[in-house]
Length: 254
Image 1 (cartoon, rainbow, N blue to C red):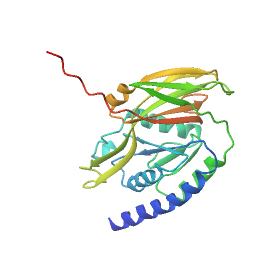
Image 2 (spheres, rainbow, N blue to C red):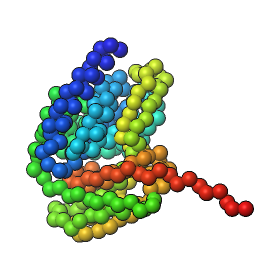
Image 3 (cartoon, rainbow, N blue to C red):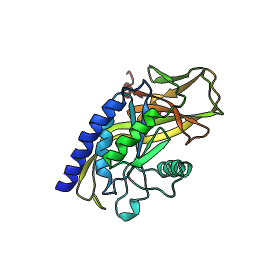
């Protein structure tokens, strides 16, 4: 346990400095996706590292719990098979065979082991310096209605528009498997995701979402990801929003 805590503290300290320096390069968001599992003993340092990056300017972090560790005695309480499919699609496009945890994918372009601070620092620096188009969607909230505005932009081919509903903070008591007995903290946990436009071609466009969809999924935030070519392509745009609190039901008048 002491060894694990020392490693986690080193990750947190190292990443805090490196991400702060990289985040000032420009005003675009670097999207850091962590594929993790409650049943993986190597994942807690990466989960802690993701937490350290969450509030850094210019960084959007998302945790995608995968289910392929469930067979070892503990079923991840947040995992979904689609998350593993997303990870596998990324790895196939990036020329890697198979999947592993903890893995970070940055902007859908760069990958690294999420628990190794030197690899994460180098990957963030690489992702921030890659020259590629960037589009900033606008998110506006009116009551429970969220309007996603896509500006007119020059894009190559078509772009998919993905909504990601995520939970800012969660703590889980792990009852079995490699992390048995630990109480672990998770941040920006994806609770649901869907593609709301498969073939945006760059014209100005507005899409609407209902915050209740996120509430039902157990989320309190949403992110919009624009991915080039297909649903797991390179990310060329992103935005995020805190969801309003669920509307309390009103009692019927007598």
